[in-house]
Length: 219
Image 1 (cartoon, one colour):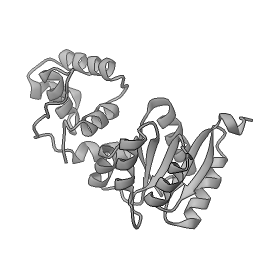
Image 2 (tube, rainbow, N blue to C red):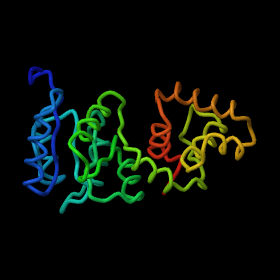
Image 3 (cartoon, rainbow, N blue to C red):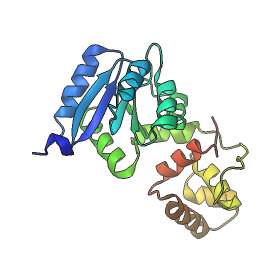
């Protein structure tokens, strides 16, 4: 049994009281986590955080009255970047998902998910700093627009690495990316591995999230 002091604090932000209560009970059933507090929207969350109630993770509903999930995630990213946001929604369209990730969310989970997936998502955010299911990943990869200019503030990356990141945010395989870049498959693997090392990432999903958050691709 893990002592509560050593558990990871999770705040639940949703405008539906019954759902909040159910989620808190579910989170409390996970050995590694406990429900720290709940809030009904972004403004309520801000008030609690200003009272020094700082959670480790926030399970954040996207669609709420008043200060919604997009605005709340953006405020958290600017003011409390150490807090990890896991977006929660009934909507699975790629624009909503990508927008939440651009606002700073570390992951995205559906309200229709099984309890085991919520546990997995929380664990993944702690261990890997992100979580996206295979279904959500597919929607992101399919919904990104790769034909955009790269901003000047992506320092530390070569032009080829930036180009590779654009193609990573598409539905192409690595072999197809190599063909688009007119290089060998081995060279594409080298770009991927170098970026994994530079950016401290471990998967294509992580590269996609980095590209989104840093403006390398836009929706």
